[in-house]
Length: 314
Image (cartoon, rainbow, N blue to C red; front, side, top):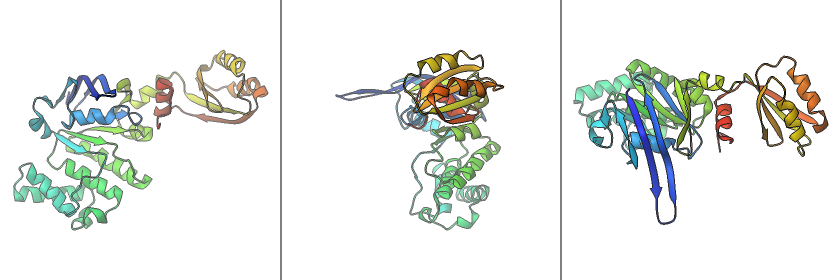
């Protein structure tokens, strides 16, 4: 395992309150894997990354990166770690080339090695035309690509990306995804946090869904969706939402319905197979006045809602 997390906890406490940000999690990441921590704001994702990258001390537990304990040997572990935090940390007084060049120098590269490595990264991330530009002259998407290029300049074993697409427009987000995928060619393991289920689904080999500091589920995105036991999600919007229990009982008794829950203005049904199902649903809900009916395939947000009962983006 390139990343091994065991019994990790982080508790913040002052005179007035005690907050458990991370609550005894165990995780492992294989070399070359693209691993995601998915969850809403406040789930514990950023705290977990902060401990892994030596910025936060844990209350309990251990983290090993490439066999090095990050708490016992933080300086040694940082040679194996690249970090792109949520906020922009590019030096605004340096050009794009200089941001890369001086990062390489910091990690012990000679002048010639730092210059060559910086040129290679500029080409890899399609930034050659921006070599003399300053960060303030770049779009948010280009700045994020520079941050990723800088983070891998010293060839770390693991790259940690904390909410890498936050604030990016759709085109920039897709370009960032492409840049992350190409990191496999560098032999770099990637651990990213996100609260965008589409991002986790698109990029990650495996996903750990977190909430309230705990890991609720861990598997490949396709397996997480399959484990719902449903291949179709049906959402009913009703005109009459009072006294729905008879409707809930009737729909819940249908063989194809594997689960249901109340949502604002109606019901969400988890179905396995839909042959002949819609007429039965509409007949059962006739007295409640069906305003709308929507059908979708399960996604990671659906999995999260089933696990926690609340919207992924809260």
